[in-house]
Length: 259
Image 1 (tube, rainbow, N blue to C red):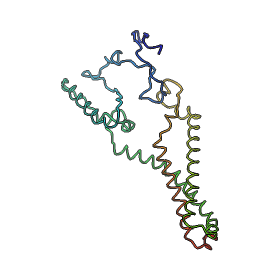
Image 2: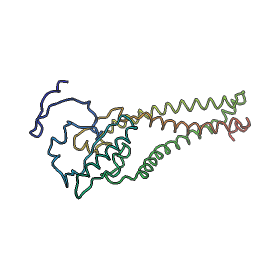
Image 3: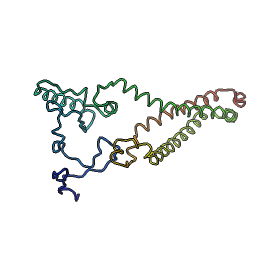
Image 4: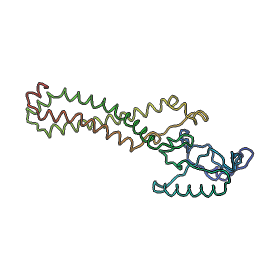
């Protein structure tokens, strides 16, 4: 990279560029920066509140995997105790930190984290976001299947077995769910990009720096999409296959008359 090795001046101090990192969106508050420099090369290192303690400070530790979390917490606790051994009338404590990414989202300004309440809050949001559209979807599917009772009766009259009818309903609803999932994902992408200013105008980084940039990998989580898709698919299949199964066991005359 052409910039590597060059010298730039910031706040009357010379810095040598040692590397250039890939640019990220300004919405990624934990990884975005216009420039990265050692904090102890700035005046902030001397702004201590009391007993050589700086107050609010955030450090991001990138672990190789979740298996490294216990070792990281153990090392952080050992260094905390070592630092406290040199203090006289004060003590540094972390309030259960370092946090993982989930816990960090629900912690506010270093206060004690109520993990149980955070998980219940997160679970409630997921249930509402999944359950409301899923109920609407299952109601539409159930209504559609009731209107097809006479069709099922005609097919039974021509010799269709219960297994054949259930397979047909299964494949039809699977296809519809796949199409609806793809259309819904594309529609949500389009709305997010088109309504960028409206959705993220209150972001701290956007307010301070300017317009935000979005990318597909920021907006798409394969596991979350797969979980939501499977949830909707199961409800859709249950709301369609149960009436179809009941209709397949009906008397042909009752099915034709939609009773």
